[in-house]
Length: 268
Image 1 (cartoon, one colour):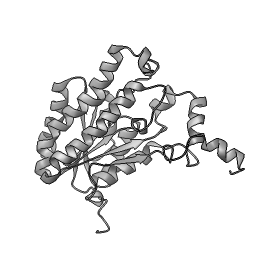
Image 2 (cartoon, one colour):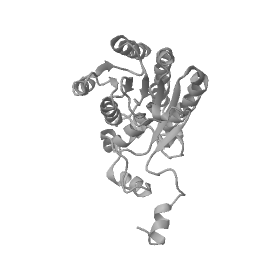
Image 3 (cartoon, one colour):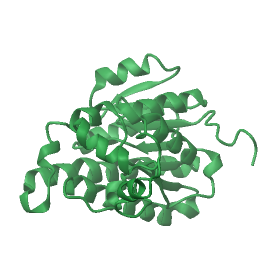
């Protein structure tokens, strides 16, 4: 493998939710490695502001509940840059005002469930469907942002975690159906990551609980997830497809109650 295998020089990438915490860091990192990025976000003003900071970047409006908007995102990117090499499906429904409504199944409203699925799963499917003809032409790849909650049970966020678990299966399905066409498809599963949206949605006491369960000394930062995405999108990961890269500081890797065991045995 050449030393510049992790470079994205000359690649064209769409980043959905590109004006947010993880998306913005990914846009900056991919640009620093030579890619040209389309920053797609429902907050077009923030996407435009970020695009103005990054060489060659394009801001594109995106509403993942609107099929026409999703298809227009792909069309606008290919029209502007002439090709598409990477689709990073990062956007999700993470409105802090809706967070208390995403609870356990017994108390879940149908409207909230349907909206989460419409944005996180249906919208991502349409983005993949729209991008795949272009990715076949470029032998490009897809990186989906899922969550470690897709791999674990929790007493809250039943809709969010279910949508992300389904997205893992869609990741594998695309890898299986399009691998021989030269298209890779992988997923990154962040744990609790200190984005602005998370800081607003989760009070410090709950964040402290997660930090104690994390094997690293601290919770992850958006830059940590961006590095994982950029790696999977690069030639360095050319033999990786249909996989989920868990990027959660070891949160999901250990036995239950590890902090209590640590205290019992006097480990610090």
